[in-house]
Amino acid sequence: MAKSIAVITEQDSDLLQALYRTGAKIDVIRPAEVSGTRLEGCDAVALLGGASDEPLLLGAGQRMAVENELRKGKKVFAEFVASIGNVYCNPAESTRYHRLACCGETIPGLEPGVLIDDQCGQRLRPHAIACSRTKPLLQYVKVHAHDRIAMTDEWLEQVSDRALWFEEPRNLLVCAFRLSMYVRARFSPFSLAKRLVEFVAGWLTDESVDLSDTPPVYSAGGLGSGESAASFSEERTRLTAERAMRWFEEAQILRDEGREGALEGLGTEVYPDGRQRVSTILRADCMGEIALAYYLHGMATGSGRSRQISDNLAAYVFEHYMCREEGPLYGMMRWTNEAWGVCYQDDAARAIIPQMLKCLYDGTDAYLQDCADILRFLVRTTGTDGTRVFRTDNIALNDEALHKLRTRPGGLPSAHYNAYYHAALFLAYKLTNEEEFLTVGAKGIETIMGVYPDTKREQSETEEYCRLILPLSWLYWATGDKKHKAWLYRVTDDLQRFKHASGGYLEWDSGYRASMRHAVGEGESSLIAKNGDPVVDLLYSNNWLPMAFMQAYLVTKDERFVGLWEESAAFMASAQLYSGNKQIDGAWARAFDAEKREVLGSPADAGWGPWAIESGWTVAEIASGLWTGLLRERLLSHY
Image (tube, rainbow, N blue to C red; front, side, top):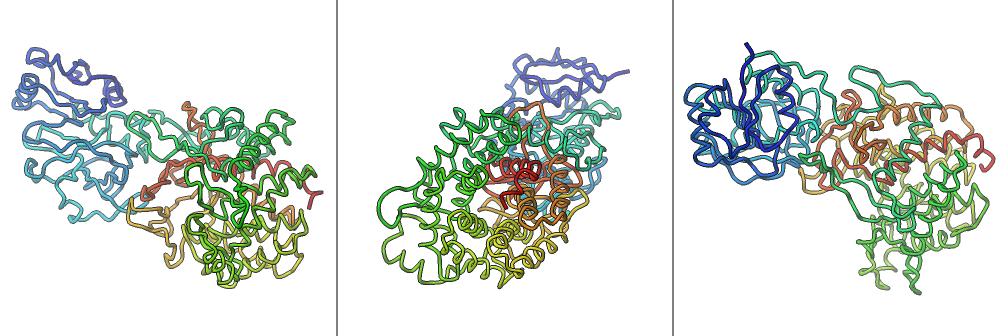
């Protein structure tokens, strides 16, 4: 006979729908309507507080009715409940940097130490004095790890960090976090989240529960569970690029056809109700990169509208973000509409490279003088070794500071900070024949390759290699020097060590030398917990490759680079998000697990975690690289 479950909740939820699927008789009761009479005929009670933003706290009479059933020996599941039995909790807090760790083998399918990310969820920290000392089933941990940790008793010492446990009496199962919306909140790995809910539902109903066919909010590449990623096809690549272009508008990134710029993208915070934070900052680099994607889309499809959007974005960047105040700061490219006096040279380069490519392909000089002036400011603030310090702030740029910048080595042989700046110099040289651009850029690349592969790494060794391919291609294009061509092939060959069967390149950092490995939540952080984890970074590493590989082909005419582009394009198609949620459909998020085929990675980065979706660095860069490859026969004559 099917069990009868009294479900006390304010509203519908994913967890309630899972209980319906068990075949149990479900009686949904609003908290204010709980009574002994209403509960008398039930076999078990589920309090689903996580369906609401505030923890569930029953009134005294309602609580007495529930605990009377508890004393009778009925099973009671209390999720996101402020107080039940002897347990009471601190106010709710965010789980942004914490993840759920399985403490034992009690939950079928969850091995000890496996991690479940509930994204930017909410939890209650129970007062330790009010908890029994039973071993929890799940414990919150704050650790830089990919998908598992070595589970030891040390993790369990913080009693208030327990997340799911059997309390005394043992027929009380307490869940201190918001599990109710596990589907829409994008718990990951999703397969493990479903195992967790199967366990809860099975415990309540005394039945085996199968939720394997519960659909997720999204899939990668439009592929279902168990399907393998498709190999390269031009048609699929075009579809992937078209879907990316739709994202800019469906996700409301583009503002007024580009006349008012474009937003940075989405933050990593996915809240319990499925909302995702929007980053409303306007960045010069992102807008420039989006302009290139629209330009190439217009070239590929004949869309005059896309060309106009590209021109609108370019006008917005050059007319608003280029410093035009007479004096030594003339030409400084502002970073964002917030960080108005800050200049990162690589970001400035990505704001103007798109316009210079438009000049190259269209044979025009639109904004070319501005591009040259922007690069002249960067050259004036570049060190004698051809590298520039990681950023400059106008407030500090007095005459003495400017003199020091140009008369001392920059001391930053880092592709992360300087490679695309050098690439911009080489492209500008090809367009203007201004010798200083080539001289400074070549000096900078000489400095970087002089210490290679031990460059100054920020995120990873993988990132450095990915970022070097484009500038090395354009350096060879500018000089024709066999040494420079050899550098391009060396870096390309070295990158292959990190290739995964999926076609993506895994994050790797020999010797763990990357500087962005801060304590969890205390700064920017690499996705690398340990080398060998199957994590692909689509914000700092792989996102640069479609464009870089195709530019290498256009310069060298070597079909090997077409093959590498095709592999990268096939991977991008397989990693693109498909969803009924227009905010993410057609985009790529930062962290992609190449084996689980879902967004998953360490949430340690304070600003750009696994679910961050950067409009420029990620979506526009990937789309532009795909369009460039599709247009390669038309573009060859320009090289």
